[in-house]
Image (tube, rainbow, N blue to C red; front, side, top):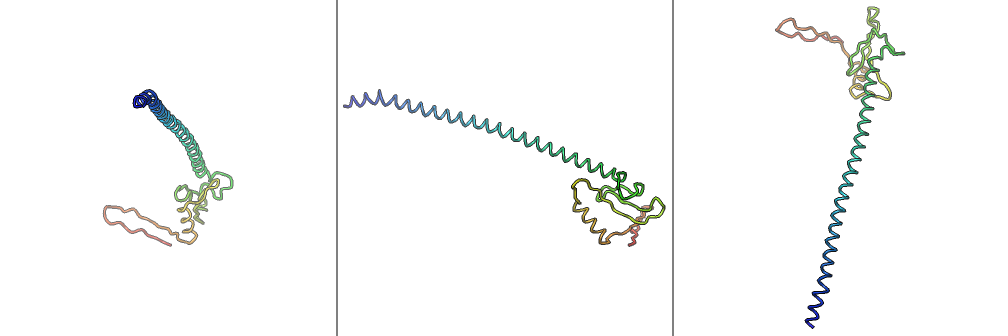
Length: 163
Protein backbone atom coordinates (compact mmCIF):
# COMPACT_ATOMS: atom_id res chain seq x y z
CA UNK A 1 0.00 0.00 0.00
CA UNK A 2 2.73 2.28 0.89
CA UNK A 3 4.41 1.57 -2.39
CA UNK A 4 1.19 2.38 -4.22
CA UNK A 5 0.85 5.65 -2.31
CA UNK A 6 4.43 6.51 -3.07
CA UNK A 7 3.96 5.68 -6.73
CA UNK A 8 0.78 7.73 -7.01
CA UNK A 9 2.26 10.69 -5.23
CA UNK A 10 5.40 10.80 -7.25
CA UNK A 11 3.94 10.13 -10.66
CA UNK A 12 0.49 11.74 -10.56
CA UNK A 13 0.41 14.45 -7.93
CA UNK A 14 3.82 15.98 -8.64
CA UNK A 15 3.01 16.66 -12.29
CA UNK A 16 -0.37 18.08 -11.20
CA UNK A 17 1.36 20.33 -8.68
CA UNK A 18 3.78 21.45 -11.33
CA UNK A 19 0.95 22.13 -13.75
CA UNK A 20 -0.91 24.13 -11.11
CA UNK A 21 2.23 26.08 -10.27
CA UNK A 22 2.90 26.73 -13.95
CA UNK A 23 -0.70 27.87 -14.43
CA UNK A 24 -0.39 30.24 -11.45
CA UNK A 25 2.88 31.65 -12.79
CA UNK A 26 1.27 32.08 -16.21
CA UNK A 27 -1.75 33.85 -14.70
CA UNK A 28 0.53 36.10 -12.65
CA UNK A 29 2.51 36.97 -15.77
CA UNK A 30 -0.68 37.70 -17.72
CA UNK A 31 -1.96 39.82 -14.82
CA UNK A 32 1.30 41.81 -14.64
CA UNK A 33 1.34 42.26 -18.41
CA UNK A 34 -2.28 43.45 -18.24
CA UNK A 35 -1.40 45.95 -15.54
CA UNK A 36 1.51 47.25 -17.60
CA UNK A 37 -0.56 47.50 -20.79
CA UNK A 38 -3.37 49.22 -18.86
CA UNK A 39 -0.89 51.64 -17.34
CA UNK A 40 0.54 52.48 -20.76
CA UNK A 41 -2.90 52.98 -22.32
CA UNK A 42 -4.01 55.03 -19.31
CA UNK A 43 -0.96 57.26 -19.60
CA UNK A 44 -1.53 57.74 -23.34
CA UNK A 45 -5.18 58.57 -22.74
CA UNK A 46 -4.30 61.05 -19.99
CA UNK A 47 -1.64 62.62 -22.23
CA UNK A 48 -4.11 63.04 -25.10
CA UNK A 49 -6.69 64.54 -22.75
CA UNK A 50 -4.07 66.95 -21.37
CA UNK A 51 -3.03 67.97 -24.90
CA UNK A 52 -6.67 68.64 -25.84
CA UNK A 53 -7.23 70.71 -22.71
CA UNK A 54 -3.98 72.58 -23.27
CA UNK A 55 -4.93 73.36 -26.87
CA UNK A 56 -8.40 74.45 -25.77
CA UNK A 57 -6.86 76.66 -23.08
CA UNK A 58 -4.47 78.22 -25.58
CA UNK A 59 -7.28 78.90 -28.02
CA UNK A 60 -9.34 80.51 -25.25
CA UNK A 61 -6.35 82.60 -24.13
CA UNK A 62 -5.77 83.82 -27.69
CA UNK A 63 -9.46 84.75 -28.04
CA UNK A 64 -9.40 86.65 -24.75
CA UNK A 65 -6.16 88.39 -25.66
CA UNK A 66 -7.60 89.47 -29.00
CA UNK A 67 -10.73 90.75 -27.27
CA UNK A 68 -8.64 92.75 -24.79
CA UNK A 69 -6.47 94.19 -27.57
CA UNK A 70 -9.55 95.07 -29.64
CA UNK A 71 -11.05 96.76 -26.58
CA UNK A 72 -7.87 98.74 -25.95
CA UNK A 73 -7.72 99.80 -29.58
CA UNK A 74 -11.39 100.84 -29.44
CA UNK A 75 -10.66 102.90 -26.34
CA UNK A 76 -7.81 104.74 -28.04
CA UNK A 77 -9.82 105.39 -31.21
CA UNK A 78 -13.14 106.19 -29.50
CA UNK A 79 -12.89 110.00 -29.80
CA UNK A 80 -12.73 109.68 -33.59
CA UNK A 81 -15.49 107.09 -33.94
CA UNK A 82 -19.01 108.10 -34.99
CA UNK A 83 -21.35 109.27 -32.22
CA UNK A 84 -18.60 109.94 -29.67
CA UNK A 85 -20.27 112.55 -27.46
CA UNK A 86 -17.31 114.97 -27.19
CA UNK A 87 -15.02 116.97 -29.43
CA UNK A 88 -11.87 114.83 -29.90
CA UNK A 89 -9.69 117.92 -29.36
CA UNK A 90 -11.20 118.34 -25.88
CA UNK A 91 -10.51 114.86 -24.51
CA UNK A 92 -7.35 113.51 -22.94
CA UNK A 93 -6.54 109.83 -22.61
CA UNK A 94 -5.87 108.68 -19.05
CA UNK A 95 -6.25 104.89 -19.32
CA UNK A 96 -6.78 103.88 -15.70
CA UNK A 97 -9.05 104.09 -13.78
CA UNK A 98 -10.96 106.01 -16.46
CA UNK A 99 -10.28 106.11 -20.20
CA UNK A 100 -10.67 109.83 -20.92
CA UNK A 101 -11.29 113.16 -19.29
CA UNK A 102 -13.32 115.50 -21.48
CA UNK A 103 -12.95 119.25 -21.00
CA UNK A 104 -16.00 120.57 -22.83
CA UNK A 105 -15.54 124.08 -24.12
CA UNK A 106 -11.73 123.93 -23.95
CA UNK A 107 -11.43 124.41 -27.71
CA UNK A 108 -13.34 127.70 -27.31
CA UNK A 109 -11.09 128.91 -24.49
CA UNK A 110 -13.40 128.29 -21.52
CA UNK A 111 -14.07 124.94 -19.86
CA UNK A 112 -17.76 124.50 -19.18
CA UNK A 113 -17.69 120.98 -17.80
CA UNK A 114 -15.25 118.24 -16.87
CA UNK A 115 -16.47 114.74 -17.72
CA UNK A 116 -14.88 111.39 -16.93
CA UNK A 117 -15.43 109.06 -19.89
CA UNK A 118 -15.20 105.26 -19.72
CA UNK A 119 -15.28 103.44 -23.07
CA UNK A 120 -16.69 99.91 -23.18
CA UNK A 121 -17.13 97.48 -26.04
CA UNK A 122 -19.19 94.33 -26.43
CA UNK A 123 -20.60 93.05 -23.17
CA UNK A 124 -17.82 94.37 -20.92
CA UNK A 125 -18.84 95.87 -17.60
CA UNK A 126 -17.39 98.42 -15.22
CA UNK A 127 -14.73 97.04 -12.90
CA UNK A 128 -15.13 97.49 -9.13
CA UNK A 129 -12.67 100.42 -9.22
CA UNK A 130 -14.55 102.03 -12.13
CA UNK A 131 -17.85 101.60 -10.27
CA UNK A 132 -16.41 103.22 -7.15
CA UNK A 133 -15.11 106.14 -9.25
CA UNK A 134 -18.53 106.57 -10.83
CA UNK A 135 -20.16 106.63 -7.35
CA UNK A 136 -17.60 109.16 -6.07
CA UNK A 137 -18.40 111.50 -8.96
CA UNK A 138 -22.17 111.01 -8.62
CA UNK A 139 -21.96 111.73 -4.88
CA UNK A 140 -19.90 114.88 -5.44
CA UNK A 141 -16.72 113.54 -3.87
CA UNK A 142 -14.59 115.33 -6.47
CA UNK A 143 -12.18 118.19 -5.89
CA UNK A 144 -9.53 120.25 -7.59
CA UNK A 145 -6.00 120.30 -6.19
CA UNK A 146 -3.21 122.64 -7.24
CA UNK A 147 0.22 121.28 -6.37
CA UNK A 148 3.24 123.55 -6.43
CA UNK A 149 6.62 121.95 -7.01
CA UNK A 150 9.11 122.92 -4.29
CA UNK A 151 11.71 125.38 -5.56
CA UNK A 152 14.60 124.25 -3.41
CA UNK A 153 15.69 121.69 -0.93
CA UNK A 154 13.83 122.99 2.04
CA UNK A 155 10.26 122.86 3.03
CA UNK A 156 7.52 121.39 0.96
CA UNK A 157 4.48 123.62 0.71
CA UNK A 158 1.18 121.85 1.27
CA UNK A 159 -1.15 121.21 -1.65
CA UNK A 160 -3.81 123.86 -2.04
CA UNK A 161 -7.30 122.60 -2.45
CA UNK A 162 -10.58 124.16 -3.46
CA UNK A 163 -13.88 122.35 -3.42
